[in-house]
Length: 329
Image (tube, rainbow, N blue to C red; front, side):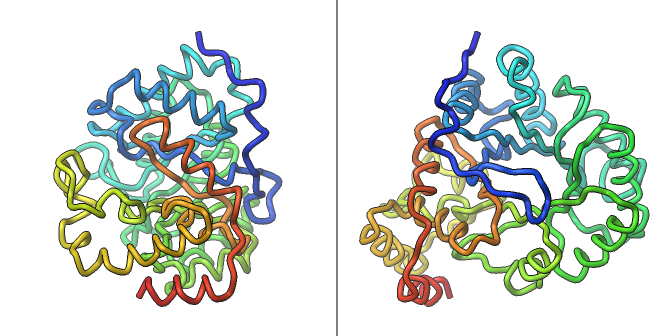
C-alpha cells in the first residue's frame, strides 16, 4: 500500500484558478498519453506516486484518453481504489467530454444527453461519486450553447462535479458561455487550451485576454509542444518517439532540421538561465501570472521531477522574453 511523502507540499507552488477560491499546483499531471492500455501499469502507478509525493495534487483526464478510450480513467480508478483513497480530499481530479467516445449520434458533441451520460461512465470507471472539475472538451457549433451550459449546470446541481471548465474554446465563445453560466450561478472557473512557446493560438483568438478579463483560470496542455521543447529531437527522431509510434499529434515535418534550428537557440537561452529547455518552456508559461497551471504529461517518473523544477525560476528579463518571441515565429 502506497504511503504519501510527509513533505509533499514543500516544493510546489499553488495558484488560484482566476478569481475563484480553488488552487491548483503550478504543474499538474496530464494523463492524455502513456496512462492507457498501451502503458505499463507499474510505471503508471509510479508516475502517479511521484507526482503526488512532490505536491502535484491535480490529475487531469478525459473520457477518451487511452488508447483505448476510457482506459486512462480505468487505470487511474484502480490507483485511486488501491492507493489514493485515503487522500481523496487532497486531490483535484478532472475529466472531460466532447470528442468521439462511442458509436452513434449520442457519442460526441455538446448535447445534454452526451455530456451527462459520458460523465456517468467516467465516474463509474474511476469509482468516484464526483469529480472536482468537469470540462466541455470542445466547442460544438451544432448544439445550442445554452443547452451545453445547461448540462454543465445540471451536472453541478446533481453533485457530480464541484466546478466546471471549458476546453478548446476561443475568446468570443468563452465570453458567451461565461455569461450563461454566471446567470445560472454555475461555478465556472477554468479554461484548458493548448499553449506553449511555439503555439500562441490563445493569444491570437482572444482566449487568454478574455480569461484574464473575466477572472477565469487557464491550464495549458501540450506545454512542451509534444516534446519539441525538450532535447529529445536534437539528434534525430528516436525510434520510440511519438512521431514514429503514433503520428496523430506530432509529424516528422514539425521536427525538421529547419524547425530545430530555432529550438536549439531557445535551448541556449535556457542554458544561460541554468535551466533545461523543458524547464524554461514551463516557466515561460507561468511567468506573467495569467496561467494557473501547466499540464505536463510524462512517460516516466523522472520527467515529472524535472518538470516540477520549472517553478523554481519563473522570472524572465525583457531581453529574454523578446528573444523567445522572435524565435517562436
